[in-house]
Amino acid sequence: MSVAMSRTLCKILSLQTSLSSSLTVTNAHAVHCPWFVSALTLKTSAPLRAEPRKKKKVDPRREQMVKERLKKKLKKLERVPPELIPIEDFITPAKCMDETRLRSPPKLSFEESERRALLLKEWSRYKQNQHCAEMEAINLALEAQREALEELRLESEELFLAALKPDLCLFPFSHQGPCYTPPKAKHEAPDGKYNDITKVYTQ
Image (cartoon, rainbow, N blue to C red):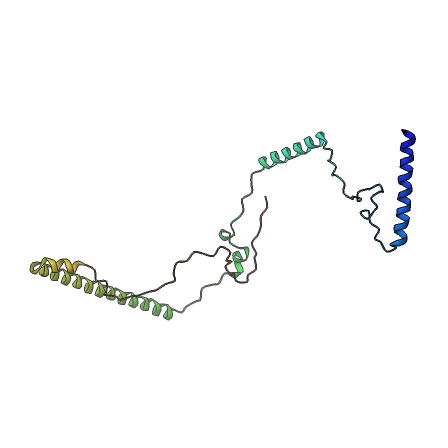
């Protein structure tokens, strides 16, 4: 059996060499590719450059050390109280606390100060008289309205109830505003050009 197998293999190899030589002679411009081979040759797959990923060896001691470091950092953060972020609106800037920026009040003469005091008193008397006149006119109008309603009630109860209803046409006003529409989901409101000077605080 071994002799027969060796003979058949020799025949196959001789046929392979003869076919390959004839192919190279007849077709000199053939493309050399692993797929373009004779059916009698030993076929091989295309070379692959990929390599399976190697799993990193994890050292359990190293992982334990990393966990312990994180625990220590957390303990330190718990000991130190958190720093409060200052609200700049409640802090007066240092340049406004400068004493050189204090302006002294202007010095007025005696005649000017007296003139301003008398003018202020005259203005207060004028506003007081105006207020009293307005209140008296309102009271007179309310009193006249009350008397008129009492006389109307004696004449007709229906007219009295109709007079008590508000008059919607007294001040004619018509307004047409924008219709209600749902907002656009991807609409970005345009912001003006500005320089962002917001301070970012990190704990």
